[in-house]
Image 1 (cartoon, rainbow, N blue to C red):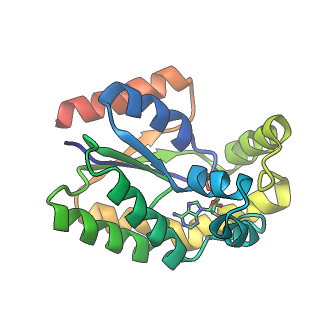
Image 2: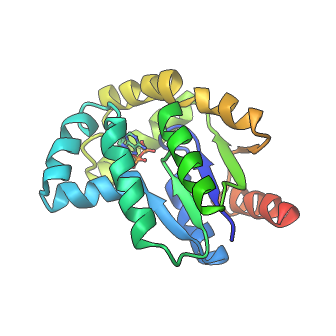
Length: 190
Ligand code: ADP
């Protein structure tokens, strides 16, 4: 059993590397962003509520996100391990995740932090918005998401450093090279 958090600003490549890691290490890929987009597309009450926050570049409130976490952990009881992508994004979420995983005796093993500078992030996300039509990938909202990342999410770097779990990886370069660096870290530690 191995539980990985993949951490980084919006557009740092969390989703891309999570998909590859889930396949290579047979982990369940838990992306709260993907779950919210699925709910939004299906116009569920959760999706309708989450959309108000996501379209403005704000975080979905912790209580809604935690509900999603708990129901997914419950549904995936038999998973061999998890890759948490885009979660946790606040200290409250991180504390709740620790509490739930510790209860089950399956704590987070490692937090991979993808480092990407702001200029590169804006370029990547504007391009993604043009390609995918994602409503939150336009320049004004991207800047808001970056601001929120710095204020509410980046403090988790300190939270996980104190737990001795944080590993920094350069998130700029060829995807395959970055992925190899991530896998080397995992293989060296487990
Ligand atoms: P990105 O990493 O590119 O911002 P995500 O798909 O992870 O993309 O998230 C998209 C949006 O979904 C976020 O800007 C936020 O509004 C919402 N969201 C996703 N995960 C969380 C979370 N853990 N807590 C609060 N909001 C979240």
